[in-house]
Length: 157
Image (cartoon, rainbow, N blue to C red; front, side):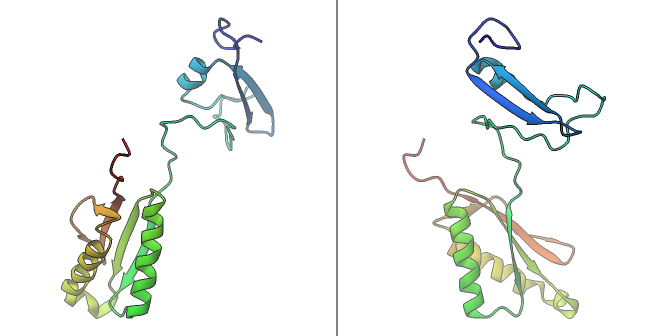
């Protein structure tokens, strides 16, 4: 079977998507046409883009669009709770995903923002071997936030 898009090469990729009104469209494409495909197919019955299209093929090199996992700290954090959150962040970084750390202030705690920066910097130091902070911690509204990205192991590229 030839590719439905170019018609020149043998179709090696089978894509199945569900369109807007539960219509199913199947495509048989060659590897080059499948890699070049960047937008979902349009519904044939309307001008609206596909809603809920589920491609069966995930091409390498494309971002999955997942947001970073978030872990929230507060001023009244206990040592055991702190260790639990550090372990959780370590597992997420070990999987290769980003972690967004928040320190949330409530009420009068806004007068002591230095505590929040100290806790966040301590977390960054504890996770230094698994990840690195993408920027300095920032006070945004009532939160101190920073994103930690995983460190690649030596020899991985």
